[in-house]
Image (tube, rainbow over all chains, first blue to last red; front, side, top):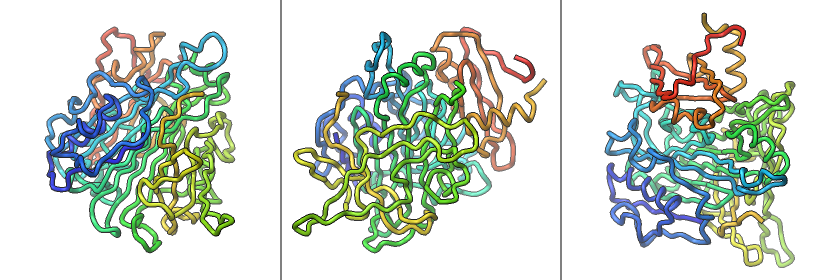
Length: 401
Length: 89
């Protein structure tokens, strides 16, 4: 399903926890928009479209339902939740172990102000602000973009705790509904994608995108690895943040773009559990720079840096491609430590640059795809990229078939 | 006994532990119980945790004065985790 949430533009700081509560209840508890708190979610402008995910895909974690995490619970202008996302291929695969195949990931979603890394210092760099998400392994560890079990960072890897405030250039919103324009989500069996846009004019809005997507099931390899390593799950996370200019009608660069991805708990060719490396401000970790240094870091195809254009049809109309996104576990690393599990990100497509606004629909026959405009593209240096990359996801849930 | 520089480098590479983590400690277990491998069993405190088979690595950063932030307090109700301080396993 596609979810569009419009926070009440007049709601102030205490709204952070209610916005998170709305997200949690829609994803985990099957809420409708009408069941969300109307003081914080604008019912007239919010909507849910498409079929729901399988009821067992998104499940709660004891102690981590909204407003229950002790590290952040004392802050009235902060909201936090986490939940599990099972693989779309749960219970599938070859062999006798099918019923035991239940891999999952943990997803954290937070908004507002919270202290960084157990810090008791209330000085500015020790506090994260804005909207932020994490994905980790099923054992509540190995999170990314920032490995924090309390999810305190900004949208990307950036976080406080240094001698200066490093977070302002990577922050999406602050702590209130008034600081957000909209929240978009794809919540399906194979995909949890969230796209948050801060408030302001088209040249002021900041965009954060995070996508947790399953690889197409490999019933032999996935079931075998999972049977011996319960934190294995062929599901990766990708994210990006773009300050100011993703909504600008003129295609221009942005100052501090990030793009990153992470596959925690993969099994290398020697049978050792590892986590992939990432550095989302660098062009050398999977962005697709031709001189990529850290070639054992994962990437995708089409690469994040690559342009994708529309084509012309017989009537002169634009044809927007739906290119299946592939997982590129490592590029040309000299070591044998890379993830051998290549594959396709199921139900995730790259489509043509620039041509789509938030939540636009591409029709393929009767199938509706929702488009997310996520990051700058088209240059080896992401800070010099001006075009806007777009991804499409089925609006309806697509169960395993 | 403490982890050697080589052991620390190996753990850092294996789990892609970034420079924002100033120090790591490693715990190991012989338990086969999957529940014991969860960070939610290991501690209630917020932290940066990296795991392998029967292995947890906890990393901590520094505050703005360069002081190491505290390691999380262990719960480990069944007392199955032991800090690994390096050397032969």
